[in-house]
Every structure is written in structure tokens, then in C-alpha cells.
Image (tube, rainbow, N blue to C red; front, side):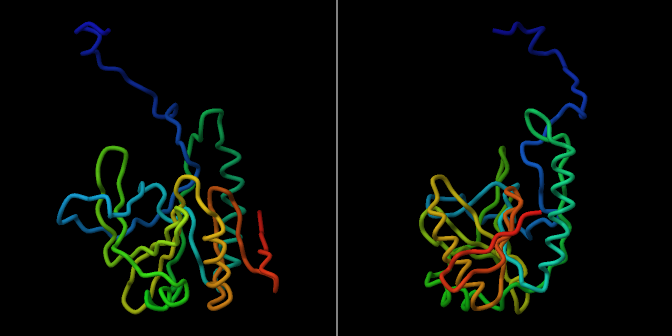
Length: 206
């Protein structure tokens, strides 16, 4: 147990020694609005660091994302240390329409859209994604995004504990076949860019 003099002592830490638990973050922040009431068990939320860690893009951005992945891989390897990373790669990606509407997603994926996701930090609630939506796929897989005008510029996926990865694969196959979308997992440093006629997915790594 600490005595009073120990507890009151101010300690200083070299910021260069503070490590990050993840190697990459999205540079764009989700548009948020304050909550009108406290979250309940029906609300879906995740840590704001997980924003866009798995996300879908239109095929027009494939070469751009491949180049960013190559740069990110080099950065991640250069800044990796035993217990984490000493710097974070901030992904700066121009937002373009991914898909036209929530209604199209509901029809394509066979699920009903829910309320906007709630983002939080380790110590507080950041807010609810403005004009946002969630799409529960089951198996601890939830897709999410937000509407900006007449299109959806962000379409991501949140993976919970013990996920049924086949649910996300099935969603990819449908979105790839109908709209040519591909999916990137930034932490795993891989792209799923296509599928064969027997639903075998095509993976690309930098």
C-alpha cells in the first residue's frame, strides 16, 4: 500500500516510451452527435479505435488501397517493438460513395438496419454516429456506416468475440457480385478482392 507522500508524488514519463496497442488508425473521425439518453443493452457500440479497421471500398479505389497497404506494411514493420508500436500509421483516404442506400443493403443482405452505432473510449462515450446505421449479420458480426446526402461513404464491419467469419464472407460475396466491392482488413494487412464461381475468395497481401 502506498503512503500519502508516495501517492501524491508526480511522475513524468518520456512520451517516446509510450507504446500503441494497434499499428494503424483511420485519419477521418466519424461524424458524431450526443446521446439523448444512456445506452442500454440493445444499443450497439465499439471502441473508436476500431472505426474502419475492416471496411468495404468500390473497385475504383483498388489500386489506391493496395498502395496504401504497401506503405503501411513498411511503416508497421519499422515501428514494431516487443509490446506494441512506437508510432501509429494514420490512413488518409478520400471518401467516395461505396453504395447508394441503406435500403439496397437491407435487400441484398437480407437483414433489417438498426440504429446508429455508439463509439466510446476506455473512459467515456464519444457519441452516436450521425446519420448512422447498423446491419446485424449474426455470429457476432455487425456491419455499420453512415449516410451522407444520397450515398454511403463508409461501410465497415465490426467483429466481436468468437465470430462466425462465414457471415462476413457471405456478405462480401453478395456485395462483390452486385456492386464490385472489395474488403480490406487493415490489422491483418490483406484485401479480399474477388471470388471464383465456386465462391472461393481471392486474397491479396502487400
